[in-house]
Image (cartoon, rainbow, N blue to C red; front, side, top):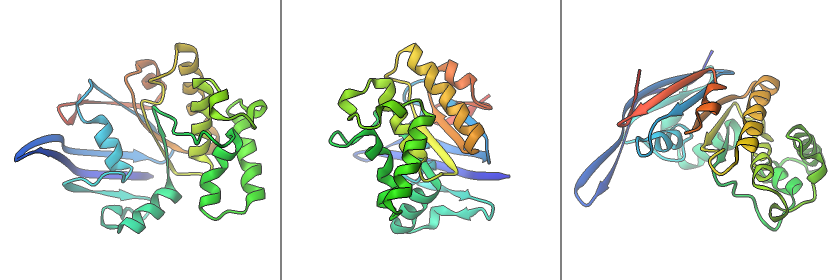
Length: 225
């Protein structure tokens, strides 16, 4: 089943009156349960495309269809997009953006609490997720007390607490050493197998890309063979 289908996605930025095309007519489909890596040199439009597919940026042209009914989410209002993101998508970035004043457990719980879920089951689920990512012994530690790899695992747990259908990740191993990168790779595969979450990631890490079901290479704003 197709989870997400993007058609004719284009995005340009402007410097004065000069148009700078970044994404040039991209078409892509993601199946439910599929893991896809987008690779390519810096500046070819990978992150911009990821942000568009995650509705964090709007394209200049094209549309994005999502779910079994292939809803055109390109037409949603800002409020509708926010609700859609909270319900259907999870995000992990190169920089973890954990809240420094809260513990690992509280950081993972936060999306559920913001969504209005009761505290007790949210805490239980956050504990289970931190156990799953190997941090059951670090529940009360704040981000400053965690290593870079541990912080990234907390951010992954936070991204999936609302059980998103699609997890989008942008260079999530970019700041990690080889050991922690390998741990994150294995974690993503385990999440895909255990939760069925689809994964779309942008990476320069060819080892991580090789763990995915498909690898799409970008060049000059579009996919190439």
